Image (cartoon, rainbow, N blue to C red; front, side):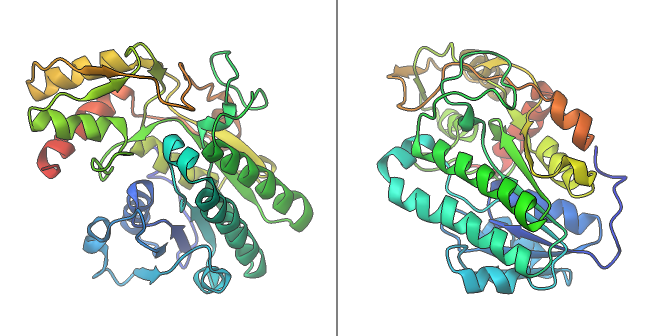
Length: 325
């Protein structure tokens, strides 16, 4: 893996908020495998207990059941912690359009609570999840930091505000922050259920049940699908990156452009299915095309993703086949 050679002080303590979620639980697992102590903070509003069940017997793992909207909980979670990976948030552009007030509470106030708690408790490095949605309607490809358009959803707005707060905490208070604009992350433990489920696991679940998935739009929209191992690498490398790399946000992707209909056809091939999709209307707040320029993360963080879409997709589909009912 691209992070196997990273070394931290042997007594280092890591806090992963949203640690029972898709990205968070994979981060917890990777850090535990490296032999370090992990503290997981989650309120299980979107995270799942089964994602962390196998960690509960590990003496290096501690679960704090709580909400980032509660500042005292955030302070308790940050006490004695060296590194924070703040993954707790509510995702989904369409859901944010329906529930803007809730997104403000969780994504903005919750992140601000975590920043302040980390500052007060002397955390060394604060890494946090942003989103490629902050590029809004900026039409140029590849997407490049510093070249953003008009935001298209409350979700995108919350992530943009979090980036601004994080930069302020670096500039004013000296808290070393690093933000990640994730591009369509996929992989093991990604939730396939519910109306707002991510496209890949949702398609797998439906196809395994011989049901036709709905593709919103014409299927010719493209995304920079990013395998979970690349995201783990980015988070861990950001924790040891030079101080000069802090106070900034970075694209985290593979730097490729995959069309949704091509993804669907490859999925049918891997699953041995021949099912025509249903085409539905475009989703509000969605962009047509997305591809990341990852040169900044490569240069300043040493990010060098090993997992191409094809390699990660094959690996993920095998996991989905074994774990999705």
